[in-house]
Image 1 (tube, rainbow, N blue to C red):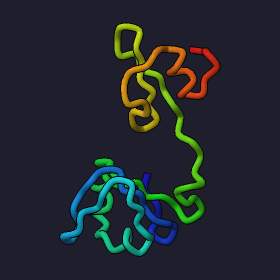
Image 2 (image 1 turned 180 degrees about the vertical axis):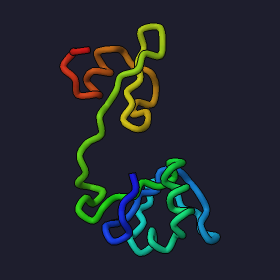
Image 3 (image 1 turned 90 degrees about the vertical axis):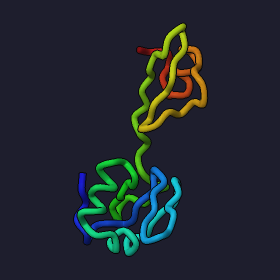
Length: 107
């Protein structure tokens, strides 16, 4: 989803990339001015490929709704918890996956 230029509050870098000779590391937050300085076609390409996550003025990065968490079986009774990215560093049991995902043992 694209946000109108007037409504852009900033962006969070999700994957490392280089812009104008500067390395943008994952986790860095860009101001609205920094986002708007990226040419529109390049900005959309960065968004579409998951390099940046642009957020609106009304939703600063620390106050967004939590992402939906999904439990994925990886085999041998082991699971990963996904919320846009893998949360657990290594596969866990079903019970631990439910705890991490915030589910009360329901499927």
